[in-house]
Length: 193
Length: 193
Image (cartoon, rainbow over all chains, first blue to last red; front, top):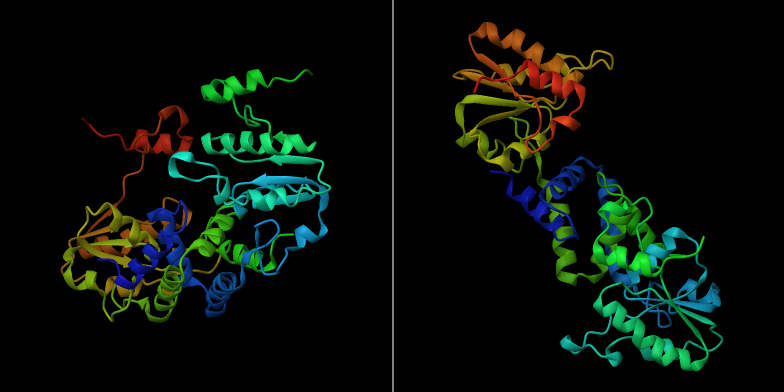
């Protein structure tokens, strides 16, 4: 019974990640309530991003330049290796890291036939000149762990330190509610205080 | 350090209701990953909604028609009165109601100078011919309660039943965690079983 045009807008918003019917409906009503200028601003931002962003040829993050600003200005002694550009955004938000990034655009998955040559691993190796530490910040899942082990095997022989993010109980998290795998990891990785 | 164009898209998404930095970032990356066709579909849906939707002259909900389909096809013996069109969407989702709707486009707020003539109350009165029940489904806040009381005062003398949605412990909610006001209401509105 809802307006067909409104339903179509709600359906379009549902194509965004983790947006259900309720959020999509709220977004649609907000669009109708916005001024023409505000709607135009949103559309321009979408069109510009889609038209101009591509991968930095060095790190694989999205940029409108040939080589992104980060690659030019970063401390070049450390590279933080991630699966996807959006993982770089997560690090940028905490603001504690000023080294280089490198997006692999995936992780190893032999069952799906995703081997080293399908990822940006050759590009990573070619960037290691002058690097003293490679932080492998892939997710703690099968593909992420496998990729970390693989990278350590080929990078450590070059005399470069390879590290992995710490795993454990999340800050503010309660031990009672931690899943078993996390608790096991928190125990085995315990630190002296 | 993030791409300026990406930052602008993230900022634009943050203008949607309850969208924080993390969600906006995920939406922005999704846009870049979408096909040209998918992005065009989203933009078309936004533009069409903004261009063609206006208020139904009967119920005040959004429609692309002069009088919305609901007003034409509904059971006309009941009117459900809500504050905003988006409240109608909430009822549509549950699908248990097949009467008329009426959006007031606000609730009374004498401090802010919002009186009966600023709301679509005259339009509501003009629709009461043949109506046997008016369900006042404004929010259980000061303005919503005030508006419900006001409407009851002017509609009951016309011999029409005026009802209010039940309040109480939400389904699946625990009494232990209910706020005092809700618990008081649940107690005073208790029903015989």
